[in-house]
Length: 196
Image (cartoon, rainbow, N blue to C red):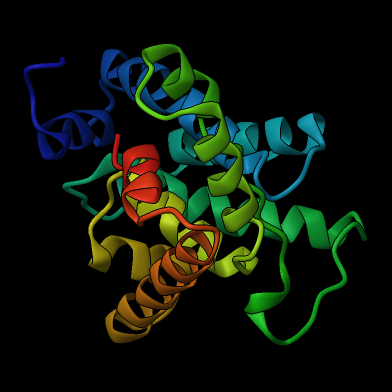
């Protein structure tokens, strides 16, 4: 299956191919789980949302839309389910504004330190700078640079326009650059960490 495109794999799954489903699950379940933990530390809630998502995919496979990016399709569906579960569990004070949910990212500082690409001091500065971002900015940066989604996909996943997405990411990068430069380091520290 790895030689097939996402469109081909998804089409096979919709036609009832259980091998395609197994491949989709094995390739994406860990990514969904890690993404879910950025909204809530409740492992059981994240696992429940994942189970619901995959059960509904199997149940409704013939009626599902088409996609050329399976991960994007799953992330979008999973995020909706998880936020609804968090809300229904009353662990999330639901506001009319979607900007109100939490999103926490653990950047892979340790890996970069091992590779010797970023000094420990610079890593600490970067992590402090990342704390300056809003949850929405963290999510946009994470999706764009860590998950390598394009702007259109990030906008779709976050339910915002492409222009708003570009502005959100641009503002986040500006905030990081400013914070890092105020500490006497260049913006290269930031890009060395997330553009992996």
